[in-house]
Length: 484
Image (cartoon, rainbow, N blue to C red; front, top):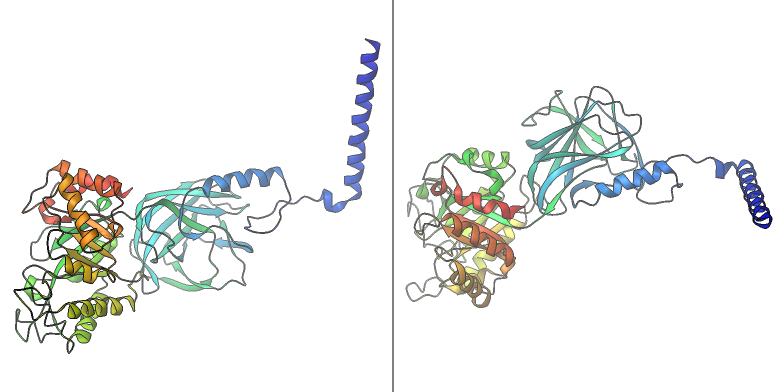
């Protein structure tokens, strides 16, 4: 017993001596004693402190969510003040998906009682429509704050603006150091985030640490909207849609043929299918953060051999792309249902079709949309016949809308397989189509087909047409879950 007590007493003396030596060493080394909490950085060494460990834990939890656009870290950063009027910063999206939260790093000593954020679309280098907004009471200082927003569609390559404002006190955030490449920043003209950004000061500032997170998904839900069929576009279930195609412009044969507004074979007609109120259509689609696509052609417009002739094709492509750009569309949909070299019409050759499609795509990809992205060029294909049309288009087209109308189960699978094997179109570029007018689909057909398309990694689902699904939009509602 005595030996045990002696051993314990000796151990206590030894540990006390080690602790004393460590204290004396720290007192003689100012560098070791002066542990100062540092700011969020992406590179370099920080001293290990309890605050740093806690902050890294908060940041790591925040950064587990996929980043869609924004700035999550900076090698060198500095303090920045955001006033009550708020500032909007632009970022290019890195991925396609659905944004569901905006993350803002709030600096220590910030006094704002509420943090307000908004996501805006882009229009010619400035914020345009407010797509989503959110706020948070008592934002945490010295930490990332995740503000939930309604799910918002994001397209890779497009420009989005994030507006940040503080309420009830000064909001301090973190921005890249002043040596950064300065960007244009807009300051709001009012204390509330406007629904449409039309006024405010233009400034030059470094970007702040703010980013959007959500789910990465390329599944598309395409709905055609017939120009002549009326309907209330604003009533669409916007969480079930990613692209809205206005159907449609028409090709021309000569002056006055097939419509009075045709001026020649290189012109395009609005009158043929009563395309009207285009600005209102595009604004409504953009206000909900979706892509507005203009279609040209159709089964009743088999006149592609005229604009695609070598003497007309350059001017035709120029006119079509100029129409898309001047009316602020996000892309073009080519509905070519005229088989080149077919027995019924030998005046349209395969080489003319290929050159026509390539010229339109080249001209479209040479410009940018108002969102700052390259235009989307899609095409509509029949999965039961005329496979050479899709094969000629395949090297150039971004997305193919399969007119697989009335097909379900094994029939749908075989039709999509035919497009892959005979037209050489990858499954990832194909949307399966449902027609609820001529081939009325049941609610289960819409959901089952979309489920199958998602399981086979198709590009998505396509609905012909929006007005036929109104007013309850049951088919689009069945597609919506696969956009998650």
